[in-house]
Structure formats: structure tokens, C-alpha cells
Amino acid sequence: MDYLPIFLDITDKLVVVDGGTTVAARRVERALLAGAKVHLFDENLSDEFSTLLGHKNLTHHPRAITADDITGAVVAYGASENEARDTLLYTAAKQAGVLANVADVGEYCDFITPSVVDRSPLVIAISSGGTAPVIARILRARIESLLPPAYGRMAEFLGKFRDRVLAGIKGTTQRRRFWETVIDGPAGDHFLAGDLERAESHLLSSLDCATGKGVPCEQGEVFLVGAGPGDPDLLTFRALRLMQRADVVLYDRLVGDGILELVRRDAERIYVGKRPDNHAMFQEDISALMVKLAKDGKRVLRLKGGDPFIFGRGGEEIEMLAEHNIPFQVVPGITAAAGCSTYAGIPLTHRDHAQSCIFVTAHGRDGVLDLDWDVLTRKNQTVAVYMGLSSLKVLSEGFASHGVDPTTPAAIIDNGTRPNQRIITGTIKDLYQKATEAEFTGPSIIIIGGVVTLRDKLGWFADDQDGKFGMSLTPKGSL
Image 1 (cartoon, rainbow, N blue to C red):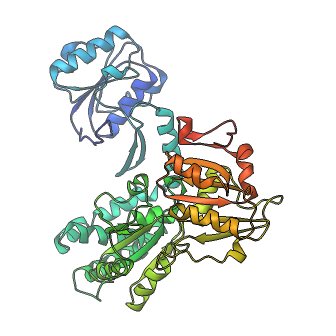
Image 2 (image 1 turned 30 degrees about the vertical axis):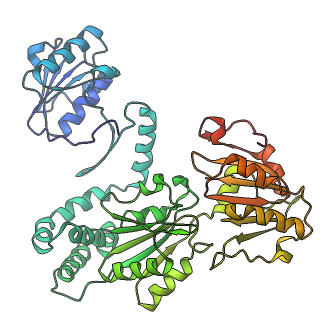
Image 3 (image 1 turned 135 degrees about the vertical axis):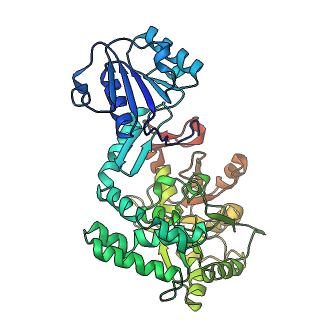
């Protein structure tokens, strides 16, 4: 993060703006909306000032700004598009200890003016750090369309109860959970529907519950969320919402840093990952910990790579939750076979190559490879092998010994959908040797079948070997 995001209180404080341009008009407008006393300097003002000049807090000086004009200001804006005036403003601001911002002159900016979504008193500011302001404006437009104006009025409504909640509910975590319950619950729904009376009734009932004056409050709950194969963009909206509501997060090694960054900042994070023969925490202990945390009143996010119900042992975890009557929700995620094969340009099914696809894991309950070879060796199908990197030699020999053509195409996708994605393609016969030479560390998934040959034509996502991360505009060949 290159800039510290803050909101300044400039009520009744001096803000100076030099320039009569459209940009200057926007600076004046924002400062006036925030309650500042604005002094504007320029002889020729654009038409955008016509609705601003009558404002009681705006003083217009029909001349260029001087160094003395900046003394006592909290912020000085330069928008004259005149190099000499911009230099004067910035130099004088530095001498006077005033924050300065000169439009489109990065070296003369102590701060950046963000794109703003105004739902006062709710305000959202978006910045790209000055590198791509168009992106910030696009994001602002999207948020504008998603955020009803009623949310600003809701903030005002809830603010009336702030002191009562502060006095009645002790502890930051408890107050945060109370407000989340109110906003995401019936009280918030009634307010947005325009029924303020019922909204207030539900809010007060929730407050009585939280302070022990009404019915007992609910115990904690568990959110079992699939984080997908790695790319944060593949998360569902529901997953993102629950990630922001959790008090504590249990995550494994398959969850990328980019995804963890989307979890609420003050949530406690507990690593429960497992590697072959190296368990940070055994499965039974993870399930027991979720039960304990929920009984302690916590909202627990169990964040799992891929999909929790596809080789993620999610079923085992919620079995124990159900036995202890712990409320839970399950959010599916994009499983590794679907996500990684897509980013590799390898469709799992194709009319000319595979009419079915089978998912299999190379690890059983006791870590023993026990596969149904009669099923795996059927023709015209794709086989996706999870957790098969350490068993690749045994897998290759097994396919060959059960009559599968050793020249059958095969691929390994390592760290699929992530910035360091790498892919090797080959055959059942030589895949183990290629993987050894590539020194893959996982997480990896193995794809076996004729669909692998389509990667040459359908590859669209640039791999780590390309020296970049993003979409490739030209197809890539096999490695």
C-alpha cells in the first residue's frame, strides 16, 4: 500500500483552490460538501462554477494565488494548468506545512484525490495510487450501481442508537457482531423496505438479547467455504460476504495469500494445513476446534481450497457440527479439476475426445493408493487425479500395466489459476520424468486423456514460464 487512506475533518477550516478549470470546480465542490471554508483564486472561471459561486462558504478572488494566501490552510489544491502557478503553490504549501495536491503533477501531490461514492454519511473512496485513475472511476460506477442510496439513510438511522449500544454492549467484538446481525438481519431488511417502525423494533429486541434482557442470543456458527483453486476472482459472492463476517478463520495450505487478504482484517487466523506426513493439525482436531469455537459464540470460517465436498473432507467436518447441534452453512467452490484445467486450456470433456470425466484422489484414509483400475482405464474419458504428484510414478506404471497406451496424452498443472501457474504436457510414459525435471512442489492436479492435446489450440492463460501473468493473446504450445 503506497498511500495511507484517511478521511480529513475540514469543517470550518480553510481550503484554497487555485484555478478556474473543471478540475478546480470539482475540488471546490467536494470541499464545500465537507464543510470547509473555501478560497478560490482565478480571473476566469469555467461554467461549472455557476452553481457554486453563491455558496456562503466560498470566497472568490479574481486573481492568481500568492504564497501568503496559503498560510493557515489545511489543504491547497492546484488546478490552474499553469506550471509556474503550480510550482508556487506547492513550494508555498511546503513552507507553510500545508497538504498540497496539484492536478496531474505527481511530484506536487502529498495525497491523491480518490473516486468517491457518496451515500452520506456513508462514503466510499477508491484510489489506484495514481497509476490507473480510469480503473478507480470504473469501480466507482460499479459500486454506485450496487449500493442503493438507502444505505446512507440507514447509516443515519443506526447512528441514533450508537450511544445506547456503546453503553449496553461491552467489547469491540461483541458490538461488531451486534451491528452485523442488525444490518444483515430483519432490522436492516425492514429499513430498506421503508418500514422504520419495524426496523427499530427489531433493533431494540436484538439489543435486549445482546445485553441479557431478552431471550438468549444465538450461539456461534460455522461457515464451510470453498476457496477455489487459487485465483481470488473465482470466489463466489456468498463466500466473500461470509469471509467478511467471521471472527476466526481456519485455513489450509491450498488457500492462497490473495484469498486470505479478503478475510476481515481483525479476524483471528489459525493455520490447520496438512502436507503428506506433515500435519499441522489432524482432521479430528480441526473438527473439534470448530465445535469449541462455535460454542464459545464465535463465527467460524472454515476456508478450504477447491470445493469442500470434493476430496476436501467437508462432509466429515459438518458431520461433527451436526452431532453437536452447531449451525453451519456450506458454500461450494470451484474444484481444482475444473479451475486448473480451464486455465490450462484443457477442457475436461469434448465431443471428439472424452464423453465423461472421472475425479479420483491418489490418497485414501491411510495414505494408501487404492484405485479402481477397471474404471480408470475406460476409453473416451478424462481422468483428473487429485493429490497425485507424490504418487505419479506408481500412477504411470499402473496405467501402463492395465493396458492403457503409454502414449496417451497427460498433463500436470502446478499451482493452477495462480500467478506462478506452470504446466507440463506429455504422455503417461514420460510424465513422471518431466515432472521430476520441473521440480513441481504443488498443489498440482494431473489430467489424463485425449483432451490434453487441445492445449496447443485452446491455451489462453499465460503461465509463469511466459514471464508474465494474465491472458495470452496467442495460443501456446506444449512445454
